[in-house]
Length: 138
Image 1 (tube, one colour):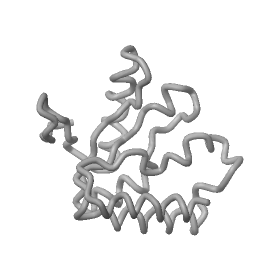
Image 2 (cartoon, helix red, strand yellow; image 1 turned 90 degrees about the horizontal axis):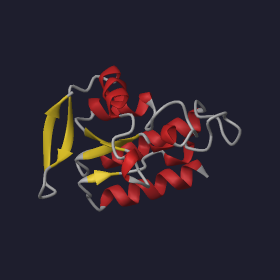
Image 3 (cartoon, rainbow, N blue to C red; image 1 turned 45 degrees about the horizontal axis):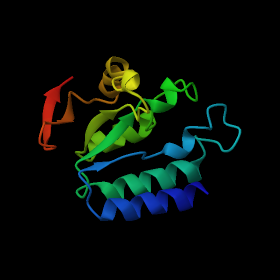
């Protein structure tokens, strides 16, 4: 299942979106590891393969805070090993809350910035009023 998911993510990345969202969304409901082992080599290899397929085609991947906001996870996604590799590949990040109401629009962004810094990021992308990406310091 994870290999099929990440193959689909690679197909989306090939289309060259500015932002690639929900990179490893399938871990959202796997907080206790009951569906799959997020440290399993096959899972990690499939995720890294999709990430590398996105390099040079996608400007930014999102750090999504929605799973934490809704109590599904205690950690944002993508996973730290993916963020570190994305930084090595020269990719950028953007924060999203996947909010379903106005109160959640900025949920966890300060913590997400710290999460990004742990992976070595010093900047994030924000979309300006015209929807164009700009960089801002973390």
